[in-house]
Amino acid sequence: MDLAYMAALPQEEFTERRQKVFAQMQPNSALLLFSEIEKRRNNDCDFPFRQDSYFWYLTGFNEPNAALLLIKTEETEKTVVFLRPRDPLLETWNGRRLGVERAPQKLNVDEAYSIDDFKSEFPKLTEKLTALYHVADRHPWGDKLLAESAVKFYAVFDWQPMLSEMRLIKSPNEIRLMQQAGQITAFGHIKAMQVTRPNRFEYEIESEILHEFNRHGARFPSYNSIVAGGDNACILHYTENDQPLKDGDLVLIDAGCEFAMYAGDITRTFPVNGKFTQPQREIYELVLKAQKRAIELLVLGNSIKLANDEVIRIKTQGLVDLGILKGDVDKLIEEKAYRQFYMHGLGHWLGLDVHDVGRYDDERSRTLEVGMIITVEPGIYISEEADVPAQYKGIGVRIEDNLLMTEYGNKNLTAAAPKEIDDIENLMKN
Ligand code: GLY
Ligand code: MN
Ligand code: MN
Image (cartoon, rainbow, N blue to C red):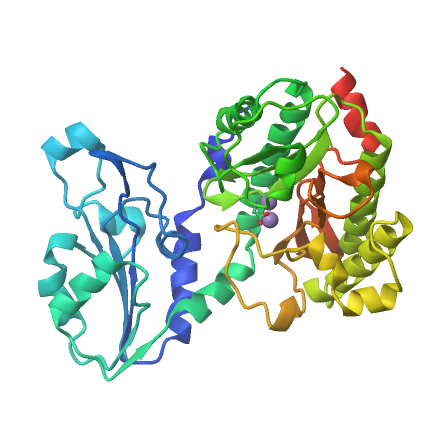
């Protein structure tokens, strides 16, 4: 499948975003955003480059060592980029550069300068401006350039709340890319179910998932993949992925692709040998019931908190029914007894970052709006050391999907990854 053509956002989208930022800036101010830089992995080898999400959001420019400067006076608005100049020798070794000459047309900006001239040009460009929108400590290399340019502003504002709120509500184009990220991520999980069997190693399954992402044009995972057999599932951020998968255990896989910079984030839990045992089935059905109820509740006007309160009630009642918790359900909820088995939140914003930006409000009580994309990921984790009936020890289950908020209810972007017990068992049989 050729998805590359779907990945390119039109340049106008980035321009429109900058216009929305201009409209929120006060007159006689500048907004400054630095790109990411290369990060060393060993000696002279770098990690794969990943652009800063905010910088990408306003430029669509994927090179390191760049800066975006928006200048707003009483009369005019001007967009300026600083970037690496062209360099035939370095480009032969390390890859092509857009360069100063081509930048204005390609990025649809008014002016471009070499990043090497930042110190001399920034003071000229910002002369007579009174305020700067900037976030310190995000990119120390940029802070250093700014300090060296020695410009003093009357006021400095944080651009983060403004840009985060914009990123929280996804545009139709962004939704299109997120749908692809969800779909390709689902392909990876389907593949994992097809190839898992006893005695294969966790990393072998990880490699099959990454291969599936890659061959659909998603070159990178959106976070480090978790392939956790048996009790490893009870370590929430287990990423060693170096153990053999045991007959009779479950495996929990939390893996997502990054497609055209946008994140997918799916968790599925299934039996290594393709067949759930009775105790595994009981815990799994409880988590699935909670997840389905949460999906019903995660619609416009409700909040993650509202859905999570219901999830907590369902799980607490279920754990009491199974004899894992003992006592009165209301009292157990009040005492947060479930915390021993469910120690994370129900969901988070999803977008350019897997844990995307935007205000949550107290306990994630923010009202859901059209264009938001969230995860829904209840889990129950019963470690080998837990003081519970023996048959439940070493069972960790999480089920995670990605939901788009629409006017007509939510849309599950990751529904293609099976989660019903029968569907999983049937898929694994073949
Ligand atoms: N994969 C990270 C998370 O689910 O939050
Ligand atoms: Mn996840
Ligand atoms: Mn998640």
